[in-house]
Amino acid sequence: MRIGDVASAVGLSTQTIRFYERRGLLPKPHRDPNGYRTYDPAILARLQFIRNGQGAGLTLLEVAAILELRGEGTSPCTHVRELLSTKLEDVRARQSELVALEAELESLISRSQRLDPADCTDVAVCHIIAPRR
Image (cartoon, rainbow, N blue to C red; front, top):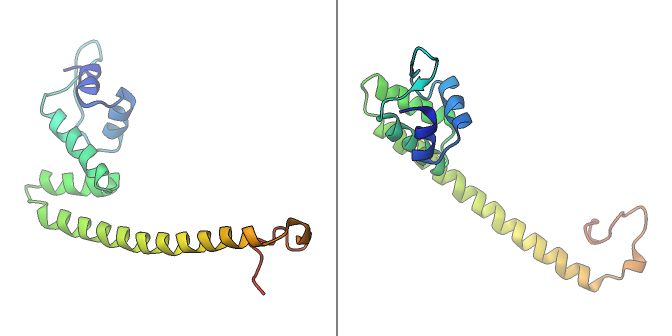
């Protein structure tokens, strides 16, 4: 398969595929005498794995580490479970932060409805987000 065929099959740009090659996420393709890249059809599953990993919140470095483990003949499942557990903890922490931010924004908006813009001074810049007295 040529790079354009691979790109179409997985819904990626040819530039993304070349980027993955440079990052070591994909094996170097065979080159035809004319210099065109020729890929084994198995590359499609690998590219889908990379996309799925990113969709699960994994970085390309994390995906590369998983691929490296598999390349060494090791089942990466335990490593992947640990990565995903850490991602889930991060998401839950971020959700808590977002809930707190939501409450703060609602409070500021509510406060803004009670304040008179004429009372705002240059020193305070904007009394909606100035320190509360």
